[in-house]
Image (cartoon, rainbow, N blue to C red; front, side, top):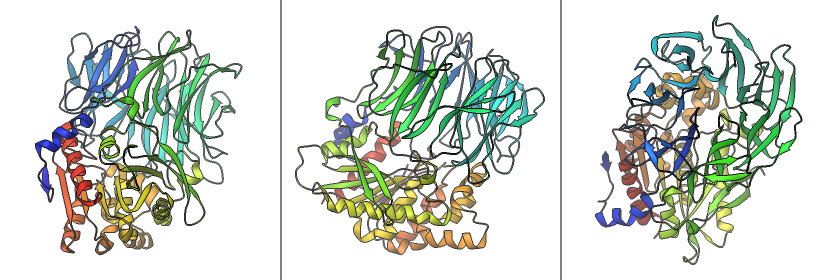
Length: 616
């Protein structure tokens, strides 16, 4: 760890932070295909690894043991004899595919060891793996199929074109076809049907004559005659439609008036469709009969976000992850009993769960009258008077701040009396395809103005102190932090920038090849002279003289998305201008810190920074 400008982190401070650093969450990864057993990801050492849980509340049995994080995996269908998962080294995100023999515990790499691989999908029989890889050009995500027990059998079945990114979505029941998502941007994606034997492809969806269309989740019907998929064609939000493969006719299956359908899962017998919606950041689950469209009852779920819904092989149970203010855990729903079942009970490091409160939904008007929303986590009730504020801006830029567990950030609220606001500025996902496009290209700084409007709103609140505001964010959120400092330097006390973009042109030049065209679709093409001039003009690096308030910059040396040079050039320029910068750079991390020892030190530095620059 390169540490510059940060005061000594005392043993006393590390001890004080322990109760907030030793939390543990768990996430559902998959069901075992032959028994009622969960695969989960959780951390007992320095990084998350895969574990099995044989019954609700049972002990977690660790099955992967690496120095690098392993977050998810898929059992081989039918028997569960093998487990496929991906892992990188040092946060570089060149993920390799590994195969774990569940009987012997032995693991071997089955990808090429050099390219970036992902989107791993077992065929229904478990005899083939489909995956995506950049091995052909180092830039394009192509689709391959292999016999996992013979890695040399890997062959190309669909080639990416024009800087688009492919991902495997689902196999047909007869294993003759693969549904492939062709992605250019969050508002522009298509669905292809690819013949595994010949590589022949057919476009199942197409954008309308006016505007762009995005496709999300997709699943083959149980009889293989059609596909269920989500799309925003002709509407603001993602809805579920069914397409017949015989004549390409489509019909609407389900929709949500208040947000996107974000995930779908078809029961093993094909008779019931489970789908998840995102409604103002909160997840809702729905279950319907396919033939009749009748909605079936489900038990009440914890308020928060849900991820990874999957049916148990017998069709009687659904597994998923629930994340809320009290933590993240693996759950299931027993459909016969109509009962919600908690499988993991993750520790909060000694924090009383009842003290971790749900956030307040905020709404405010921006410079052009557009309504912006976000979530406020208040300071603990024992702190009186106007409270200092941390504005935490999400990345993406198409991300979304959703209610959830605040992890070690609970220390800010409970021990330091700081309130935290998570805004969803224009360009955030979850609010319709018009909203997500409002910051594209030359409208980039309109989202920064939404932060200015939030500063105005903070000043109207009797419980918040507009003279003590810190902005905080990572990745694109880091750019938003730096841009907010150049626009509102006199209204912001200090800032924390994590792997942030400081110059749009150098970022687009130096980001990994496989990301460049996807990012140009969002930010603009720097090879165009007019766009290049605009990007240079709005880049925080070229306005660094306006940043005079204290800044903490945090960067992983191996970051493939926002290269380390983005932070280094910013730190050097601000220091040359006489500004105060604390700098952390981890040599074994990439796009943010994932290892617990690094995260603990990062948080200690953040606490020192807040004590020194925000609280007084």
